[in-house]
Amino acid sequence: MNSDITVIWSGEGEWKITIDVFRDLGIAYGAALLGVFIIMLVQTGLPAVSGIIMLAIPLTVIGIMPGFWLLNSFSAEIEGYPNPVLFTATAMIGMIALAGIVVRNSLVLIEFIQQSLQQGKDLQSALIESGAVRMRPILLTAGTTLLGNIVITLDPIFNGLAWAIIFGITASTVFTLLVVPIVYNLAYKDVEGHGLPQITEEGA
Image (cartoon, rainbow, N blue to C red):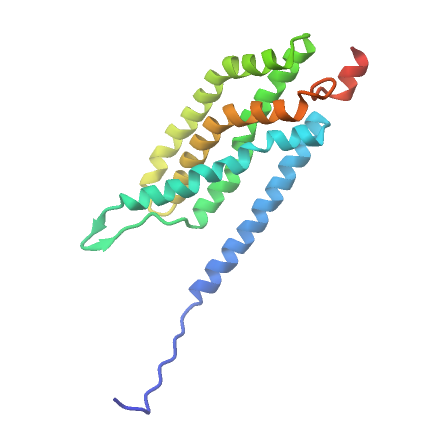
């Protein structure tokens, strides 16, 4: 072996570009969460209720990460080489998009709960009725979103985005119907007004 030979690894800096892209998308994700919280705060006027509504967002991760792991465990090989579906930058964009999509389910549940409370119903009845009445519209909305993204999974570039939305919205929809009412009950069962805006209580 010739000791005079040196090897220099160089290129276009793919790893640096990847790190920079995910860093920027992470910042954008944080900005999106902050924007959603501000909008929810303006809508409800209560920080705690806004936080409960936003519980649907981290619930998407429960579906996205295991979903990609499960998808890759069944990935086929092409001419002897593995063909994994990676969590790419487009998948991260899908997570950002989900922040605005899934929060609607929580908002619908919370609004229905508060409408029932304004009608004089007790908290338990309002929580049960909200889940029973709003379940079908929420599932139909999630189903149409899933169907719209199935076609995108065939695209070699944007399939990560589609799978992120599919896995995320599936988990978030299922868990939102359970987690949001439970957390709302834990937070407001012993609070006067059960989380109704102050203006409603003054007008009652």
